[in-house]
Image 1 (cartoon, protein in one colour):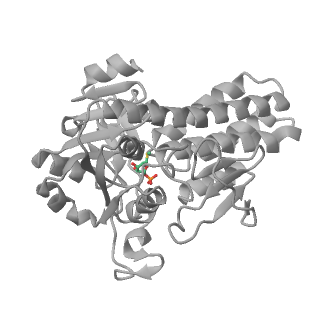
Image 2: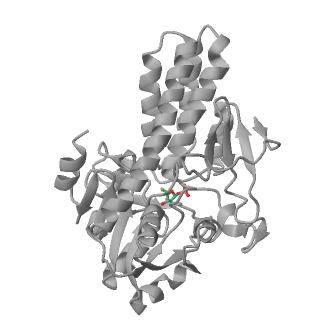
Image 3: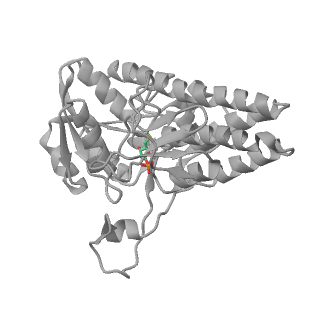
Length: 357
Ligand SMILES: CSC[C@H]1O[C@H](OP(=O)(O)O)[C@H](O)[C@@H]1O
């Protein structure tokens, strides 16, 4: 169920840009239409939220988990009058889990909701308990992002410097404030940032359409660059850190993130630029031993053959469109979560900080 007539809501206390919960309906900023249109879509059913995640109305590892959690609450509200209410909600969780495969935050959030559901004995109790859990997941994410900003600054130079980032990892990709862009915000507010180079991030253009828009909204100096210009930028020496997000970090410190991250890590190492991954601990999957085990989403070839419906390639040319890649831990200089910083990550340090699964 999508209601485009819903009024455009203002920013809420969580500082979110993309997700607004109204107690019995979820409003999502349609990120497919940014930067030129700000359209909010309203959902009252879990299937609609699952479709929104699959179709990237909402995207970004933490934002996907938060939206799915609210989708479970919508399922509980719908199932309230049904005798098999607990089964119906469980089925909705399965539908939400099938929306996208790579960001572990989706499954982490749904596991928290499933645990809450199992303890409930009546539908009204389930609605209240699941609502509390979804709102907690949302609030915890914003708090984690602000903490990561502080942790990251503790290992970075005091004097102002420039950074390069990939994809969008800001308030549009999270519950608010952002992961890698949260570090950018923290640097900016500490007067330690010269400028941000933002990779356009083909094919979905999260960088040109979302990051450039998000940073310009706050007056943070951003320079947009073609993905293929990143090597030249790193060679010039102004950039001291490449800072990216993550969709899944495995027990040995390997990192799955937006396609193009792996090549950035190689470029950064070649040019002596440090490479930082910023993600909440809900992105860490200690059950997977290495990045080889991470399911990598492949999306339709139309995302590469056309932009906004305008063909930029022959209509039937075969396309290979993996939308994530895996950066090996040895190319990562620092992993920053709300629990702290791991420099030169390896399995031993990951276990010490996150425990075994
Ligand atoms: C703050 S995590 C954002 C993370 O999610 C993005 O993927 P997508 O836009 O396809 O959901 C990308 O990997 C970002 O690093």
